[in-house]
Length: 342
Image (cartoon, rainbow, N blue to C red):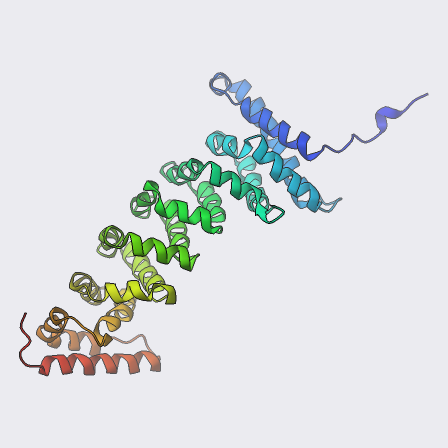
């Protein structure tokens, strides 16, 4: 007498797991979506399959994850175009499925075949999928999920470079000011990663797109939104002071237009913004090669500037006070110069 039906089922192979995910995602077609019961059943199948994927990548409590299987899963994800399917079907997926997807996403991106990251290579052959993820910030239901997926992609220089160079990058200047605070904050986190994660990539981008980038960035610095002003000012300081961007900083501090923006921020009602503005303003003032127009503005406005600086203090910070005194001395020096005419 056989009791074979009591035997545990054979574990699925990576190929079978990915095929099941692909088939269940394809089942979410237009016809299924409009039929409630059919949609519920299809989504349950997708959720079950992503749970299996998570178990295979991270272990299920009984078995440890297998490194070879993780690589094979990544290969199959690319081979079967599941990455594309996932991005295009993301808005339909349930909460648990999205949670499992986010957990698996970073693991899959890190899988290497030889010296190459296979999922990164897939994106390099389908860059338009990155555009899709960026545009998803317009859909508040999936914005935070897409943001997390984007930031994992941005960890790789080639993918960050594409987004910076693409037309969709300009959308971030809109997204960071969206009325939904969570979405705006998440998009700013992604925006910040794009401008700080890869020094060489960012330096090349700022060099080749200097005028148009800072034209738009000025809008953030002069925004009526306090959070936008504060975050963008801090970010400006972060990427301008990076050594690979020293040539960008030297160019920036020659421009009277931007010095006026920073001077306006020195007068902001927020002390935090004033202090952040000071750390950029001091570079304009300390520049030994100040243009004549910069000198004239500093001289003409020296009384107001000195009053602002005397009243500006973050508390017990000796370095800040020392820097402030040096800047005050330099402004006083400008005010005593004669023949300051354009």
